[in-house]
Length: 322
Image (cartoon, helix red, strand yellow):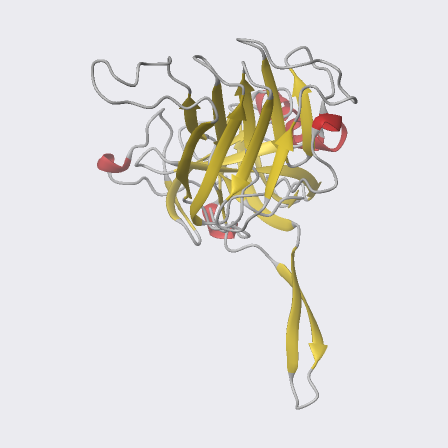
């Protein structure tokens, strides 16, 4: 029985961490890995292993699908009113083999479980790594396709399957977060040794660059002391504030070393012990803003801050394509 293999790339295109990059449609050479809901890692493009990708059938790695809503224009044509990203479908063919029927069957069944368990235990992760070390990943759910080819001689020592994977979020994500850190320094004298000013209010006006293709929704971690925390996107005017002394919380000012984490998508505010502090936001005026692609002018303001007060902003860039 013939064994299907993928062509080997030049030696200088070996990616970090091992594996073999193969030419995939729409993105060029890449190393693919699947991480199932249990955390088990499945290499998908190592032609020396017994499970590898048949790259000719891979699809769904390009730009996200969109649904456009429009209104008729009285003079003809239409005007675009709304753009809604849609779930993505990825087609991923795999070849599985073994030295004998028992070995092959064990691998086949284990791989089927690794994908179908996403329907019960949460999404798995499909990750593509480039030879330069950069990675992009997407959460996937098994949809259909884990069936043999039913060809003569197959399902004895080897078989292939064409998986359809459903992605509720159509965008690819860089697994390495970008972090912006601002911290208040110790108070210093205005006169000695040089003229300086130490602010107890403003940690910083800065520009945060989102290198991705679409808006990201950052997570903020605030370290006390602080009595009122305000975050402003100076480019759009959107802002939100957190008051630790709000009646819905009743905690009082953040003390030195105490931390609170604010997630913008989904909206969530948690004190360090897990208590829900979402009632401390300045509703209904609060807007938990995101970071558009490119440069974003932002400001962090902490009232009652002193040495050790800090703000950490983190986000993972999101991309249209793999």
